[in-house]
Image 1 (spheres, rainbow, N blue to C red):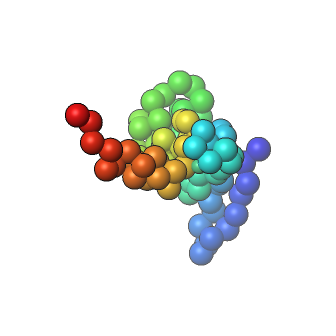
Image 2: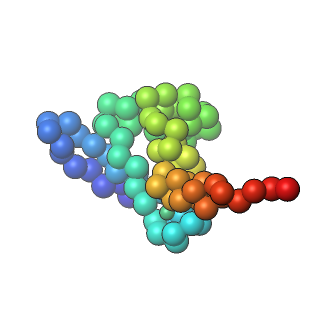
Image 3: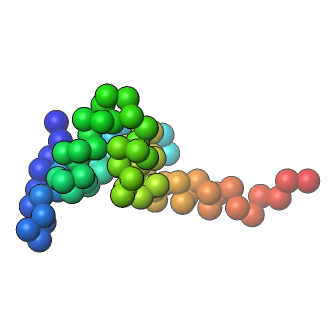
Length: 86
Ligand SMILES: [Zn+2]
């Protein structure tokens, strides 16, 4: 179940995310309670994540869906860079 913490007077829900295929670690996405309260039921009901959480960054949305951490995406793309395709 999600972890709940108070940060600077704001309640933040840490939603667990699937295992990242790049680093093999599970993760969490921090979502402010007001956003979570509205968006999460919509998301579970089948809404697109960008509709359920329009304020969430693309990287955080991706992590919620696939588990891949934004930093891991950066590494994956960094690995791809510099490989010339002839
Ligand atoms: Zn990762």
